[in-house]
Image (spheres, rainbow, N blue to C red):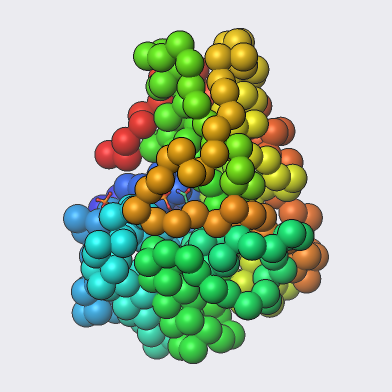
Length: 309
Ligand SMILES: NC(=O)c1ccc[n+]([C@@H]2O[C@H](COP(=O)([O-])OP(=O)(O)OC[C@H]3O[C@@H](n4cnc5c(N)ncnc54)[C@H](OP(=O)(O)O)[C@@H]3O)[C@@H](O)[C@H]2O)c1
């Protein structure tokens, strides 16, 4: 466990708990909060808090004003053969967090996914669009969303994100950079549309949303924490090459049919951002703007960690 004060002692300091603090987003959340003089941060990795343990969750949440949940089962393909286990984390674990927050009077910032939608739309999904997940991971994450809606309607904030990449885990961007060193040609699917989102920018927005929630200026409910604009995996890979001085012609388009995986993926995973206005925010920056900023970070320039530690 790490507990950090980032400024002079003050009774007004907001006490934050970050769960899943060792993951890609969790590590960025801890970095953002550790640099924030308003925050006192308790950062718990999985080994320190397993969110499927209701008693441990209750004990961990007590005494905090704000809980940011970055803990999740994120193995999308693995969930197909282990849906009960995935749901124990993404559904029941979130139920425990929401219940503990309700009892403690704490607000919960929870991260969900575009995979709660089936991806057959032609325009971006609004926050209140009907959900219909295509795969077990999406169903497990939807169970978490429902737990918050039921147990924490006034204090719960569900922020759906998608296509995350970051310094501490890499995601698709890290994988592309890694493959660029090992292969001359890359075949990348060009028939799935989504919003590549830098985990650090999402972490910043989650923290901003948390303070707006405490100030009473952000209504509880669902927000879409994805970058503006959208693209395909193929175009994203080409952008990564262009922005790092590699030859984008090394990347060729292919189709999802050529890359069959255990879990079905939505074809059009694009989320609308209208609800940010209700909280006084603009949507997150365009995906290409954030990608250019991220790729200037030393972890990407020197070779990303492709696997989370
Ligand atoms: N990555 C994406 O493209 C993407 C897209 C949409 C939504 N999301 C959502 O974004 C959030 C953050 O994802 P991420 O990319 O940062 O994932 P990540 O790097 O896999 O981090 C998830 C963290 O949760 C931990 N964890 C797993 N089971 C746990 C449990 N029972 N109790 C406590 N911690 C547990 C993991 O620990 P171990 O590593 O030790 O298992 C890991 O540190 C998740 O809610 C995810 O569903 C991600």
